[in-house]
Image 1 (tube, one colour):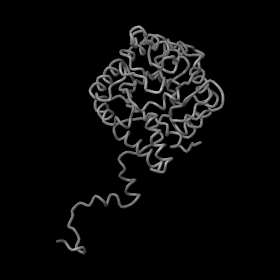
Image 2 (tube, one colour; image 1 turned 30 degrees about the vertical axis):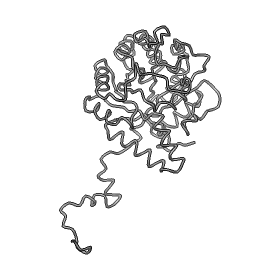
Image 3 (cartoon, helix red, strand yellow; image 1 turned 135 degrees about the vertical axis):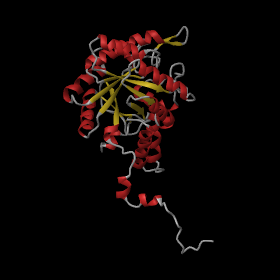
Image 4 (cartoon, rainbow, N blue to C red; image 1 turned 30 degrees about the horizontal axis):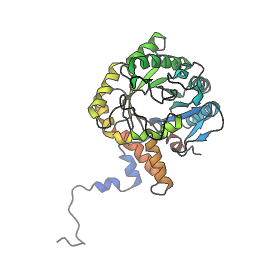
Length: 334
């Protein structure tokens, strides 16, 4: 038996590379930067800002406050924001026609942000769920109980064109309809909007982690989760996600996205290995909410936990992360 006073004879001692803060910084393999982050922002028509109960520290802002918040983020180094609307129930209908209003909430906010901060990257969601009375991302046929693919795509093309004309840098189709990336790309090009990029939600899964987001945009219907499994991917299917990413790339996407991020690190890694395109990942509302809830209960340290979660997403292969922690990362807190 080795005596406690005797030293082990070891050629390699990996702990030497962990011995001090300076050494640890020197050999850091993945460095999380503000340049990696995109901040989602929820906007509403008017009134005081409202905290989203299921997303502590995240608010819905009226247009002028959205602009001010976006400018704050830009001044602190955040490269881009992603806009999501919460419109009044009275403006919703089964066809989501409010999405086609050139003077609607999002186009107005985009124009104002671009006037005040032209260098800030602005991404706009392209999907119908904030605008439909039924809460689906596409046109719902009550007779068949199906979401109509091709009719939805035609409407999304018009929505993308309106957002492009308002000044967005990227449209981000999150609907998961077949063929929508190619159709939107063609529609933008036909409208002389070649400068507008397409950030495709390429592998978006039918996840239970979206609940707080649906609260935020007002699309939750009833107590349960709206069944979107006919267009969003099954959480069981990795290869299907890779196929969707491949198709979106072939159709002309500029950036691919995996959503959610944390529970799907394997998907991020596999998509990264299959494409040379930039890859985004969305750390969704449920991921944010669970970290916040645990931190508020004193079960973990908030800053350490959220930074670790973001590093894991980057380590899996994401070039950029949509995250509600972006304001905290740059020192903006309520």
